[in-house]
Image 1 (tube, rainbow, N blue to C red):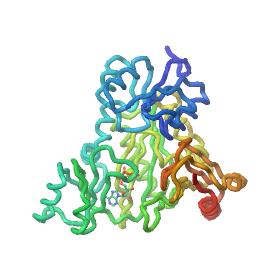
Image 2 (cartoon, helix red, strand yellow):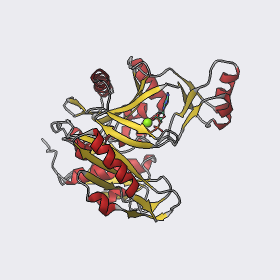
Image 3 (spheres, rainbow, N blue to C red):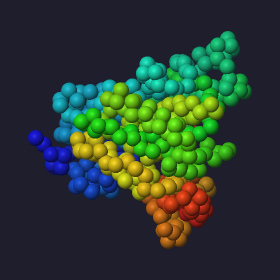
Image 4 (cartoon, helix red, strand yellow):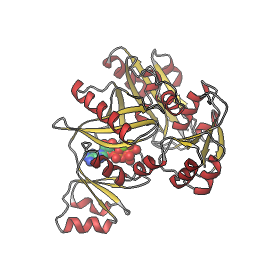
Length: 382
Ligand SMILES: Nc1ncnc2c1ncn2[C@@H]1O[C@H](COP(=O)(O)OP(=O)(O)OP(=O)(O)O)[C@@H](O)[C@H]1O
Ligand SMILES: [Mg+2]
């Protein structure tokens, strides 16, 4: 019987900030973590061994995986064909290549949600820009709607709100998921975790609060200020989904709550997620430790919140490009309950995500006030 704590290597496909924070958690248990990432000196390289290479490439993933005990991911856009081969050789792949294949294509992901009777927006699938234009011309599709490229989108890239026919000239080229545009009242996310023994835990929903004009996350609040009924509906859906997808590890489930209080699944991600960064200090078990517990077959950690948390992203200040410098960090760290997480990206660019700050306190008002203060004082310049 092998122990979770032996020295066999555990591979992570992707070495960005999620890989870094996973590796930081792994360092607590002296795990032998290796990341595969194409960027020299990627964020995770600080705390794990790095192999330089492209996680989308079949041969590279096959070679990287050959000597690993377990392989996990920090990004969905990886070569699932190579993972299937590795799985056939007895290497444990979490999440499994089958679930990963369904999720990395927003079209098949949506079909899966529908097949399971999970509440989600109405949709159709298209193969080209021209097809969408034809559907509108023939009155088979009406604005407003949302176009999402089926693969390779992230952080809002690959998503277009088509609010009126005037926006049709902005359509993206490629196979797409077309969704009805929901009149969103609240946007939340729930993390679910499932270990190799099939035990499932979920976290309290978090709420995303966006800038009214810029497409930018202003704060993320934990716990979300939604009704207990909506919170338990969302947690139940997340638990059902991680179970039906047979995922081992984390599943982050994004929800849109509409004006009639319907809780609709927007999309899912089978890995640590940006909506779970607050769990490092804001919950009894961080998402990163929880993910490792799941894939190593360990007992799940408690998910309870430790108080109110607001997360703000640390974005490159507009007007600055070049080596990143952090201004105002000392005064922010002087505040109680302020935890700064820098990802270690060398270069800043306008709006580039370079870190996040978790702000903890006893009341929502207290944490929001501190978050505004931090936002106004902590800047990434060059
Ligand atoms: N059907 C919809 N109706 C209304 N708003 C939507 C709809 N789908 C998505 N959105 C909005 O667009 C945002 C981005 O969409 P989505 O989460 O699918 O894309 P993404 O590129 O994967 O984003 P991210 O990586 O930031 O999660 C959502 O967070 C939500 O605010
Ligand atoms: Mg999303």
